[in-house]
Image 1 (cartoon, rainbow, N blue to C red):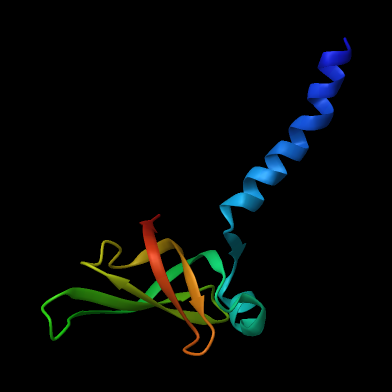
Image 2 (image 1 turned 60 degrees about the vertical axis):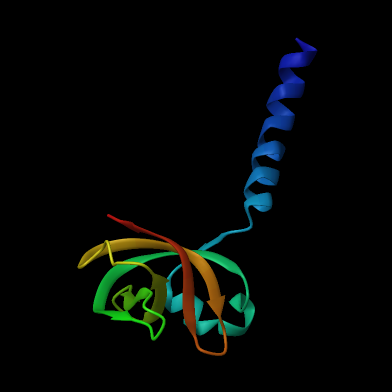
Length: 112
């Protein structure tokens, strides 16, 4: 019985530690841009609607694309390499927030 109570007490703490070790902070475009200094350089996850998609090829021949991720009130610029998978609709972006350029340099873009 003691082991069961111990497991019930320690399990939530372990889940919290796992989320903290992941390092990603979930936020919205409005919250991100409203607190740019707080999020600068941080690993974040942001969801919203894809607008203003532009696909480009660099001088070295590598593809990249940019788009704005909007929550209806604010929109944050996203920079990603490769070909755009999400042409329109909702997306979730994982990446690092560049506070100077006020954009997300993505590591993963998931279409919804």
